[in-house]
Image (cartoon, rainbow, N blue to C red):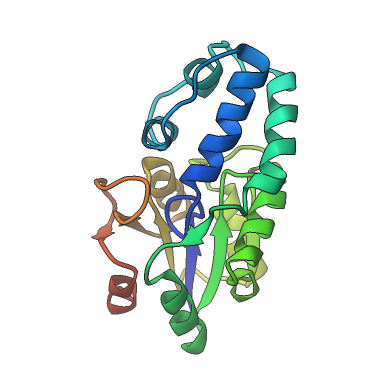
Length: 208
């Protein structure tokens, strides 16, 4: 058996404009701050070391009032501009036709992940869609991956597994889960390191 677990934002789905819109909504409503550009937002999200509340809202911690406003706004916003990257849907269908099991491990809340993946028409292909609200710790902790592997009765001695993502947290989660890490450069991060680096979704088919 072969298993592929994907990150969502920046790997399967280009969600940068919707994430930025909701962050800017909170900035304006709660903090009277000027809007940020989407390029800056995704670069900040993918930094190895960062304090996102400080960067986005100029607060030391993620305040509850900001979280409430963001989640209320993003519930509707998250499907306004979200699209799959070129070649992703074709990849997912091809993997499914070959009998390869797939899952999603995302640091986004699962309510948004399910909504977005359903909106772009690929949710049905995944065995499990695991969000940050379903685990004790988000990536780079490996628990998200382990949930999917345990669900499909993965046998490390007989089966193969891959973690495909666009940042160092994904790669570390894959390493800590004992699976092969694949860095995707077509999304939020044009450069990175993993067991393998690919620049187009079709290259994953060649790899596995």
